[in-house]
Length: 116
Image (tube, rainbow, N blue to C red; front, side, top):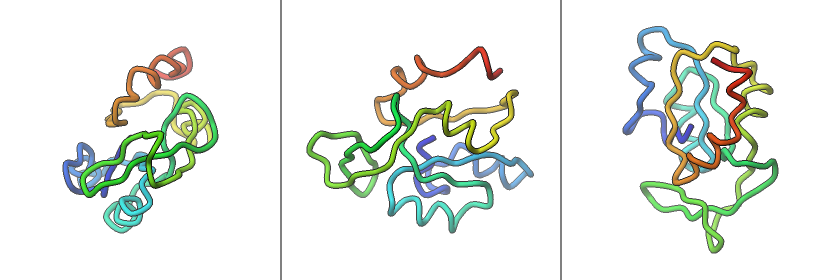
């Protein structure tokens, strides 16, 4: 979550190079375009949120942040929906989360009873 371009500061690129298969999630349209070019795993263009819809983000060269005055609207969904729609297995080996100050709210809604 928060895969950026899939290479720079990536926590999962080396795992993918060693045979890992997973899901990279990135809402920023510019970063997502680079992500799908840089990675072999499934890539999802969504922001992780506590609701389904859209949210506004500020966008600069190094990060995207939720912002009421941001210049970019992106689609968002809950982590539960994204996992369900993309067939994420019920047993998860590794999660890397960089969702720009939304971690606490998102993880409070995570269905821990369904995933281990």
